Length: 140
Image (cartoon, rainbow, N blue to C red; front, side, top):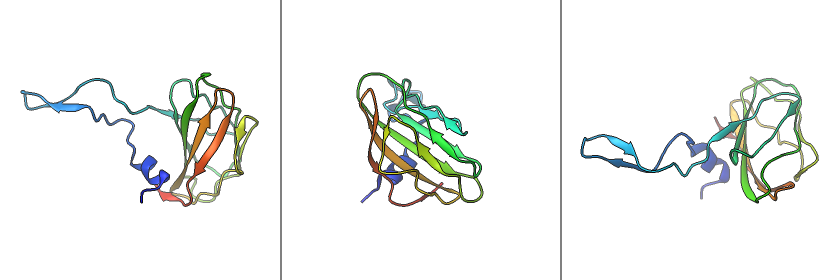
C-alpha cells in the first residue's frame, strides 16, 4: 500500500505524462500537463499561503526558527490541497503552527532533518480542513 507521503514524494510536478513519440524519433509534449505546479512557500515567522495558482504547496525549513502558516487565501471554489513540509535545517526544526482559517488536528508534527511530511486538506473557499497527515517521515 502506498502512503500519501510516498505518493507526493514520487510526484514530479515538472514531468508531463502527455508525451508521444513523433516520426522524428523525438518525444514531444501533446497537450497540457495534468499535474499542478508547485507553489514554493517562503519560510519565515509568518508563512503566507495562497492557493489561487496551484493546489500543491511546498515549504523547505532551513533553520530551527518557529513558523506559522498564515490564514489561507484563494478561490471560492472547493479544492484538495497538498502541503509538503521539507526539513533541511540540519537538526530539529522550530515549532510550526497554523493560524485561524486552518482546521487541523494539531500543530506541525516534528520532522527529522533530511526528511519531509505531507498533509492533505480540503479548501472550502473560506477555510482549510485537514483530511490526513503523513504518519511517518519520508526521506528527502
